Length: 294
Image (cartoon, rainbow, N blue to C red; front, top):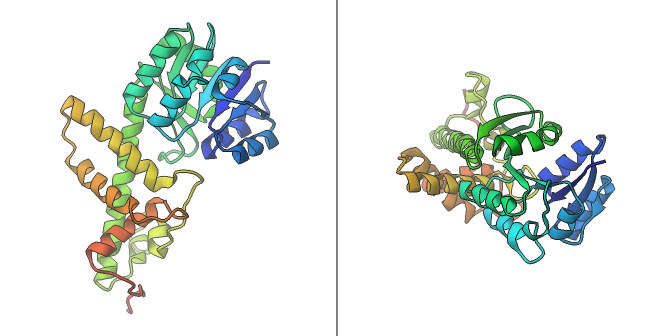
C-alpha cells in the first residue's frame, strides 16, 4: 500500500490523518512537537525521526505547516525533505505560503525528479466542507489527484505552482476584511448604545457570535484565525507590491490585524480579538456592554 508522510500534525495535519485512516494509504508522521506525534500515532500513523525520514519512507509527502519559514526549513534543512526525495515521489504542500515558496519547492522537487503541487486548504468557504486549491503542472496534479480527493471534499486545479496560493490569499483577504468590517459595526452599535445582536436577529446578518459575546477564546488549535490572517494578508501585500496591484482596503485591514496581534494573549489568538482594536480606538476600556433598553 502507498505510504503518506504527513509533516506537521497540528490541527490540519491530524484531520488529514483522520481522513487517511480508513483508506488504502499507510501513514507516517513528523512534527517538532513530540506530543503532536503521540497524538498522530493514536490515529494509526508511524512516527518519523525527521522530515527526511518521513520522506524516505513515503511515496507521498504532505506538508501541513504554519507558513513560508517552516516550509522552507522542512524542505531544505540538512535533515529535510528535498535531500531525501527520489524519482516518482510526490510532495503536496497544504500550507498557505507566499507564492514564491511554492515555485521554489517545485524547483527543489524537479531536481530529484519528484512531483510537487501546492494545495492550500480552506474549511471556511461559503460552501460546506474542506476545499483544496491545487497548483502545479498537469503531470504533478495527476500524480497527486487521488490523494487530494481523500484529503478534501472538493478541489480545483487552478494552474501552475503559485496560482493556487494566489486564489487562497484572495479568499483570506475576503475573510479578514469581512471580520474586520463586522468588528467595526459591532463596536459602532455598542459605542452608541444599541445592542449589536439586532444585526443578527432582525436583519439576519451572519455576524460572528464571538463578536456579539465578546468571546476571545482561540477557535482552533495552532495559529488561530488572527495570526493566520495577519500572516496571509501580509503575503498578499507582498505579491501586490511586486506586481503593482493596488490594495487600499487590504492595507487598512492589515494595519488593524498588526495592531491586534500585539494585544492577543497566547490562549486567545483568534480573530475575535480584532474587536479590541476598535474598542481601544473608542476608549472602551472596561465598560460593561449591556443590551440597549427598548
